[in-house]
Amino acid sequence: MAVGLAVFLPACGNNPSSKSGLNSTEVAEWVGKQVRVELRRDALGTVPLPAGAAAGGTNRTATAIVGTLRRLHSISLVVEDGRREIWVPREVILLVELER
Image (cartoon, rainbow, N blue to C red; front, side, top):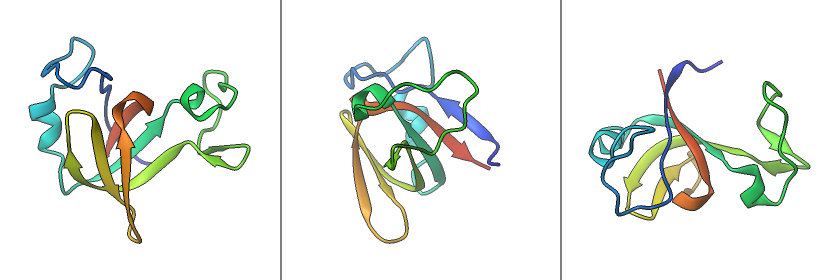
């Protein structure tokens, strides 16, 4: 199990800081590091899981992306999973966890 620091990234990308998480400048320091991006299940069209339920996939739909954070934009993140780069729009992100 990965132990890390989680951050909520608000969908409003022009907001440089958030009361509920790290600001964009702090998250930018994570570029080049291993992260886990949890996706909002409602954005994927899947049924939300109860609190404490195991994550990772619902109805064969990936609910998380693990890889190296390559770029951080005001509206998205780019994560490389070893085979490809994945563009993830901020509005579908539940949280980002820094792997330690």
